Length: 164
Image (cartoon, rainbow, N blue to C red; front, side, top):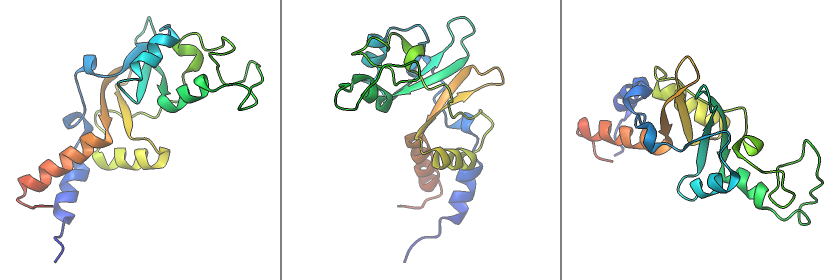
């Protein structure tokens, strides 16, 4: 017989992200917008993404994922690359010079007061598995991943004495 997880899920959904997020900023993939593309790519060897911040204000200004780098590394003849101001940045054509030149400027975020329910809805809507947690000044104060949410769910399940 399957267990009823509604009580556990209600508690899980109402948990604030500030209780779950990674708060150690040195442990998050954060680079400045003037970071050279080779260093961006090197950072992506360890993480699936990097969040880009403004050099002066330290505000979040973009994100680069490993999928974005696939386009940067693609051979132009294979994909019909035509250099233009709106074209995908390319290492081959020298249009991918720094983080700012390749970053996506519209970043899906959350704030520390968001609930897990809110974050799961956002992750599902935008098909992402990780979000930067930002304050009212757009500065990164943490990060939350799908794995963080899974770990919290499991800790609540075991705390309630249920076994999955």
